[in-house]
Image (cartoon, rainbow, N blue to C red; front, side):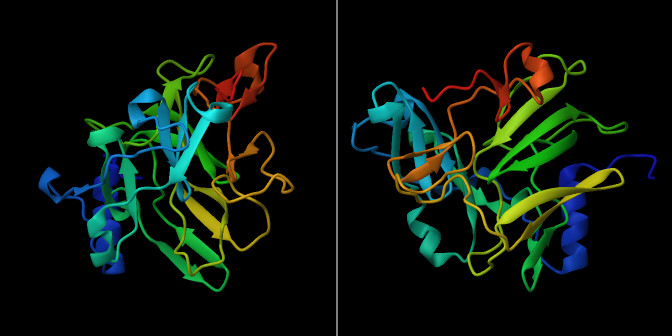
Length: 262
């Protein structure tokens, strides 16, 4: 083990040299790709009216002004995206929405047949995290900085909260838009594998519906979710738990005690 921990960006840069690709960790704010403001239908609300996140190919807002408490629209992408062969991750709401290449904060998937491996998966920041894939969502716990690491680089887009009964400063973070292998790959069922002091993400070709998949009322969405406006969606959550133990007499669902759809 090294005497000084590498930051996540340093590890990405080192991996990029080994793989012969650019990690893109030094882009300035001027390199950001502007995405259009979202006009949500059918309730004609804007991002500011509810809690909004990308889920799969959709933009989802949980708001009391929406039918069934949820509004969905096709995920808005930058107009310049058709000129760039990049998969992007978008964060922020309304006019503050920005999109950046996913490779800035995670390594690419390396695929062979029906199995893809991401050696440095996306994490909430450079701290120490344990993560689990929940039918297409990613839930992580931790956040403590490794010894020798001066600071952490937060990855925007995660929904985070303090764990109720965890260690001091332990957080729980949920990602509704995690990295996936390319669309050409059939590997869509993912899990995390711990290798010493780090984790890697493995996606394989297996059956099962993921959150963010299109659906109909006759189709079964992942346990705990529902088919709303033609999309398999989780309930609206405020992360504060990792297990049922954190919730006392309640249940921990998608990292939240007492998750509800509105």
